[in-house]
Image 1 (spheres, rainbow, N blue to C red):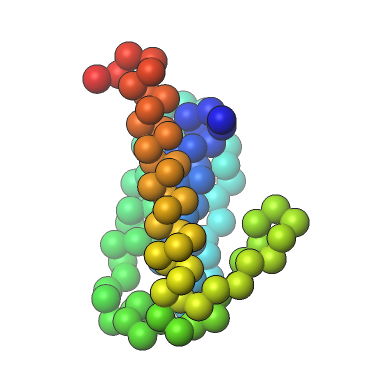
Image 2: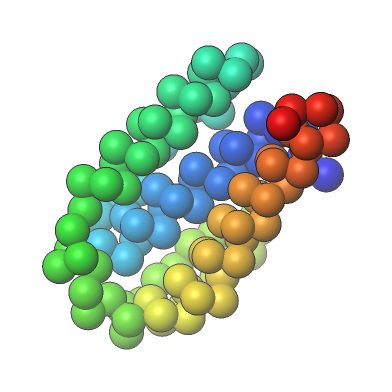
Length: 109
């Protein structure tokens, strides 16, 4: 299992990457150098600002878009709807849930 920092990085990568790919814009790149809770909060805030800048019209009609990305050494190809429902959302929620679980296991209420 990845550490908390990596779980947050991956979750935010899925949030910004999914939104960008469905909207047909470049995915913003982050340095993945967060070393504190404050830095993780800043990353989350930056991601929220990016995602919230999009409107439904920016993504509407992306169900059939071809989406290709690299995961490790593999190239993955999807149609927009399958990408969102079968890959992006399950992975996003997995990493958010795992970050939550790690915090709870360390006593955070």
